[in-house]
Every structure is written in structure tokens, then in C-alpha cells.
Length: 329
Image 1: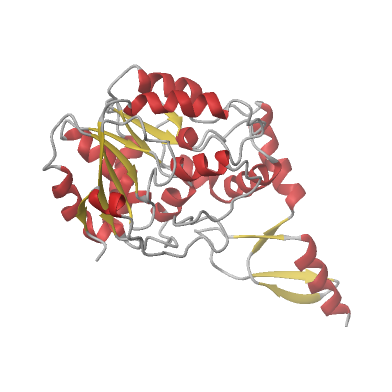
Image 2: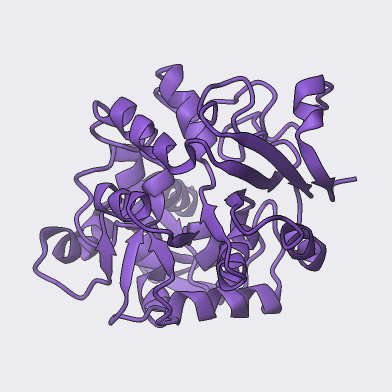
């Protein structure tokens, strides 16, 4: 009974922390009783304390990340491409499978190269949360504190600390933001990127960027390259080849997880402009509906929402006309 009480207390008051380099089960001795715990443990309060020096600025060992408004100005006033990294891309590099993309050494190696390259033609985005977290809502603060406690040092081995990075959440201005009052103007400014442009979406089967909203209504034309909703990297050669058949003045908008990160870089090297803007359409949908949490969107795949990973078939004639290539059969 006493041992069970201890176990129950631990389950209620302790966070379980995965360390990619330490998969061993650890032993804890409580009053002389050997208790086997499933993973390395740390309390929520302990994690916050460990991250505090970075948040407060007393530990300045953080990468250079330009905040999203400044980064957007650079995109608006240049022809640079954008490749983004989030927790999913980092997790994949660490050897983990994602819900929609299995680990691939080739993909992981490409991602690591893009993180470290000095090439300035591509803006490389990483999360702007290695330091202060005041711009986040409480749930996002808790997530990133926990994530950095588990992964900060491993991520630091991947980064080029002489490189200027840009906020990877440039395309995610709404759902995790502490201040949402600027989002309307922010999206209006974002739309200038594709005004009167011929754009091509490279997206997962049910991402359906811009479908039934006006986010891309000011584009000159829209084509779609539809990719597998799972493990898109397995079709990468075909996807890249299809992109390379299009005119050089095409603006590519990518929403394809880690595959999009690599594709943005490769298209830039082929003299296209490619913007990896995963989640921007979903963030816009949440903004329009004034959502307070991540919720499903009708007819769209929402990886982060409960019941949002349902892929529905779409027979809309106008949408189907936009499809240039389909690799999701």
C-alpha cells in the first residue's frame, strides 16, 4: 500500500522526460525501497527553474533568431526563400518518427546541412523561444520549457551560432500568441507576398491551402502539387522534378512538414522562390473563427487538433481544376 501511494504521488506530480541519449530505466531508492521508474523524471517547477536563466537573459547562450515581424519585412523586400524548422524537424534529426513522417537518415542529413549552411539566399527559420517566452500563452510556455529542458543541448550541437536565423513561427502568428491583437494586420501584410503572383502549393493530400477562405484570393493564379499525407519524403524525387517543370517566375508555397524544409532549399538553388509556410492556412482559419485552442477545420487535415487527422475526399470542381500533379494516389 505504501509503495503504491508513492507511485501514485509520482504520477500526479512528476513530468516524464524523454532523453534521446538515455533510454535506460533508472532506479530510485525511497526509504530503502528500490523503485523502478520508467524514464528520467523532473518536476514542472524544476524545469521552469532550469529554463529561467535563458528566459531572464542572464544566460545569453542562445542562437540569433530574428523575430517574426522583422523577418516578414525581409521577405517582403527581397526575393529570398524560407525553410523552417520546428520541434518536428529537430525530433526527426534525433532519430524519431513523426506522426506523418518516418525517420530517414537521408532526410535528417539534409536537414542538418540546411541548419548549418552559411548560404544567405535561404532564410532558415528556427523557433524564437530559446530565450524569453513572454510572447507565448501559458500552454505554449509549458510546452517549450519542457521541450528545451529535454533537447536544448542536443539542438545546440546542430546549430551554427554565427548564423542569423529567423523565427520559424513566422507562419504561426495566432494560436499560441499571448497578444493576438495584431494578427489581422499581420495577415494582410503577409498576403502582399503573393499578390498578383502565379503560385503553386506543394502540400499534403488534405492540406488544401486557401480552400474556402480568402488568404490567397489576391494571387494571379493557383496550381497544386498534391503529395502523400504520410511519408512524403519517399516521393521527393518525383515532387522535385514536377516543381522543376514550372516557369522560373513561379512562387512556391510549401506545406509538407520536413520535406518542405528541404524542398524550399533545393528550389532556391534551382533559381525559384519557395516559401515553407506550413500551418499558415490553419492559423488563418483559427484567426477567422477566433478559436481559443487548436480545433479541427472542416475539409482540412489538422495534425495538431484532436479529431483533426481525418482525411476527407473532396469533389469540388474548382479545387480539382487547380491540381497540376497528384502524387497521393
